[in-house]
Amino acid sequence: MKEFIDLRSDTVTKPTAGMRKAMAAAEVGDDVYGEDPTINALQEKVAQMLGKERAVFVPSGTMANQLSIKAHTQPGDEVIIDASSHAYNFEGGAGAVLSGVQFFCLPGTRGILKVSQVEEAIRPIDAHFPVTRLICLENTHNRGGGSVYPIKNMSEIFKLAKSRGLLVHLDGARLWNASAASGIKPGEYAQRADSVSVCLSKGLGAPVGSLVAGSAAFIDRVHRFRKMFGGGMRQAGILAAAGIYALDHHLEKLKATHDQAKRLAFGLSGCRGVSIDPGQIETNIIIFDVTHSGKTSALVAAAMKEKGVLIHASGKTQIRLVTHIDISDNDIDKALKAFKQVFH
Ligand code: TLP
Image (cartoon, rainbow, N blue to C red; front, side, top):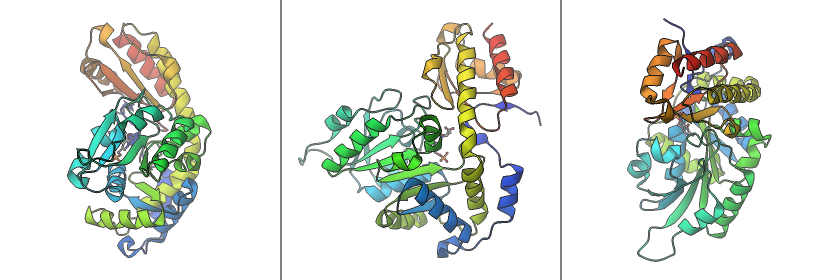
């Protein structure tokens, strides 16, 4: 099979030899009985990293977010969320189907909400209105171009939520990236939310797995719904071992992937017809527009594929690139050379 430089997503990272060794050696048990020692160790580790009472292992980031929404809400409740967020746009409409909630979508700036926007969206207590129950934030923000939530905004929104009896869920699929970029510990961000979902399968090499963290009572509810949604797994310690390995060995590699993203963005800014502001690159995601090149993103993606580089056409004229630990500095040079040829 032809080896591509795969910049479509950081979900494409593969287990390393060390990770596979850890997986093969993992002690396992039946996790539906709570008897998988490796899963239990991962759950304790993540709960501790996030400063929460407990955490529970689930198959995917989507399930982690949707279990959190389910456990926080009642059907008919309203969830305040940025309009470009993952939980609203890219989870198959699950909030409506599985939890019966409706979303109040706000126009964030690169996915980031201001407390004043959130405050205005909270419904008055009146029989005409839905009940506002939950605020969902995403850090880093995927469609926001890997933007890091300023801790100040998170603090203000959490404070507002508490003063109005509301809950906050943080989609932290790439919280590790936020932390690597800002130097703020994951637990500091997590303190500003009632629940947090984190992923091991984005940029860290683990093949599968996410966790939801929160209070013990909340995790009891999540655990119950995990079974209901079909997410109860058995000897999945093999997967949890990959997660533990990723947290121990791969978190420290994220910062370098941010530097790669900046380098890619600077290179792209010199390409004809590409609209990009390299100064906006904060982590490992780059989103840019190709309208002025006269090409569609699909056409650019096809031309890049010919040259051995996979990219994601995220809109008619919009392209997303994601750097990750399986990309070398040499790959970045090669990708830039290919872009220069395509946008000659
Ligand atoms: N994002 C993926 C897929 O949507 C394609 C990607 O390539 O970026 N929250 C955020 C912020 C995410 O970016 C993702 C995945 C998820 C949740 C869902 O995780 P999974 O794919 O494990 O269900």
